[in-house]
Length: 117
Image 1 (cartoon, rainbow, N blue to C red):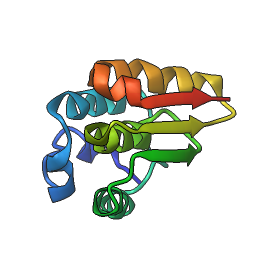
Image 2: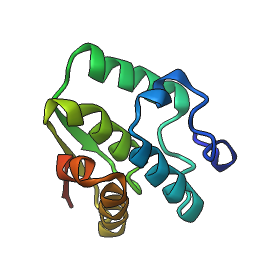
Image 3: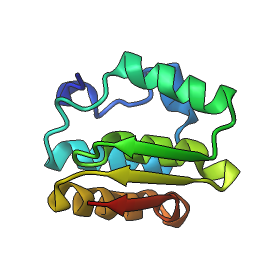
Image 4: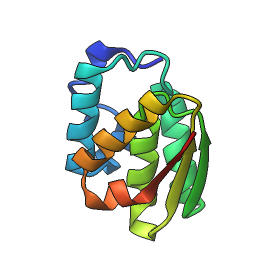
């Protein structure tokens, strides 16, 4: 579980240092406005980021977007390889929030994310 109190200093974990500054800022803003408790835990995200990069993943299917916390991180990681993240969620609200913060993370990250209900 991600605790909002740990979000403002996202540079503590080594895997977080791989994120673009604009993505870090978008994550900080997202956590300050929307609840991210229940999002992917720090330990799970570390494993996911390492796996995405070790396998040079380009295209990812994510089932369950919530508000886009993991989606922003995944898109940031696959962006250098020009891939696509397809994120699917039954909540239109969560997908809209995800797109909003993806734009804040920058054009490259935003262009990596395709959302579906």
